[in-house]
Length: 195
Image (cartoon, rainbow, N blue to C red):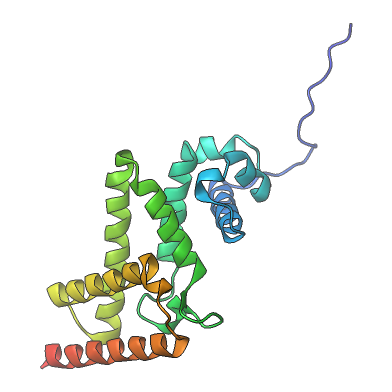
């Protein structure tokens, strides 16, 4: 009996770099979650099929789904143009936050149930806080402890909105007014800080 040759990639096939493949997996995770797939029901196989990569790549590059989720949170958090501007909120829906920020929060909440991820989640929370602090420093001229306090207050307000605040009857104009008043307070604090 003749040996059957294992099917392999076509001659001349090219492969993506590890960074490109990782980004494909992160984007596929975001895409599937945007479609309403619950985090707890999302499988590595679904993610790799959506990313159009080999099924072994979640394990190879991340170890498991939860570590892919960690990277997805970090990707979303560091790709936001601003955590203090109107871009954070979706102008198309009344009172809703940017859907990717909601996804990051959902993934964070999912992983927070596992104490094993506490150090990594703390690291991500610190990275987001630092990003927000630098945005406040750059835009409003605040620095040091004052910028850190204002970043913490802003993140607490966002988390409050994501946990229960989104259930309140809030109009998009109210959110825009709140953001503008918060920016005005930060401008005043910046002017006082520079004097």
